[in-house]
Length: 175
Image (cartoon, rainbow, N blue to C red):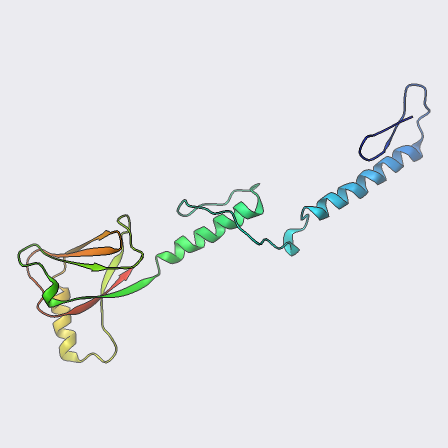
């Protein structure tokens, strides 16, 4: 009778009788070892603690069945971060004195985290306590805005026809 190298299971040789108890013992050994293997590598991962995730750089990554838990969960985390990025809002002030002197009138302001590839949404922002008269002035100033172009850490706002004559704030969404 021979024995396997790792699990010491019985292997009958040419003239050895085949004994059902040897086969049963081999299966029990295999079952025990497989159970240990499943438990030692996480088998049921519901109670497994994953302390680090694999970093993901692509935008909106989609997890794929069969990936390791670190890769899979890293992609889920990055997808959520990318989705939430579109919800972030920053307020910036455009001053009447900050516009260029000739058309198209431009003003560049800093916006933390924005890149040249971002396409944020702009809207007029009214701070708490604003008066009705100031609402009217700021709406007129904001109506002059025709376009905005993002850059590394900044946006440039364009007014092609008319230069705003009062300070106003805009919300930059999606940074």
